[in-house]
Length: 259
Ligand SMILES: CSCCC(=O)C(=O)COP(=O)(O)O
Ligand SMILES: [Zn+2]
Image 1 (cartoon, rainbow, N blue to C red):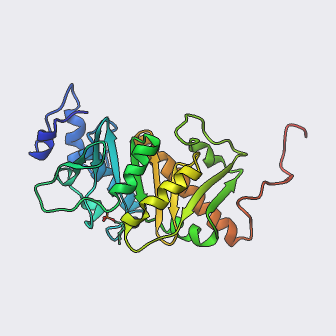
Image 2: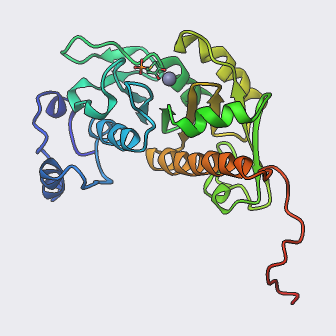
């Protein structure tokens, strides 16, 4: 991490270690430059903007959190998620209590206890909540408690639970679906139950709402989220075309080694 907490809070974002100053200066002039070596107070705004651009965090919905050891950083509640400033990010301890609030009058994200599920139950390094239309729609197309898909290359970008083993191309990838409630915090217990029932999952879909996705680092959470969203979208398209995403293919007639 390049910044002391006080540096971030005072808005002095240039106090960097060994030669990384240019990177951040560049970022300030060009919002598209991504540094892979940032402080969570910078990363959360940056990643929330990426989520907004992907349609995952529009209308103030969605958000994210990053853990650095025992420090947990979380986005504020009810704000334009694409416009969060570093000094608006909350710092919590390992049990999710706020230890440093923004100076501005802001509320901690309603997702906080759900984010904590990923930290306490899976030792996650980051967790995000997406309001993607694909996550929402897929929950309507898959009745019951499971989204299922198989024989898709992108499932190899997802790890089995907290292990380092990825799903194989021919595995059945399952994401549990929980029913929505009126207040986000009330999803906490059912998300926990789903995670206990499905130890291999790194995501929980919330029907008619969105999805929670986590990973061992923010990079893992981000790339797994991209893979999950890809799989949700392709499953929707497959169903629209009358194809079954959880049906293993038979002989599809392409060239194989045996030809
Ligand atoms: C239109 S957003 C409704 C609330 C919600 O589902 C959400 O994810 C945002 O929660 P937050 O408290 O982080 O704003
Ligand atoms: Zn939500």
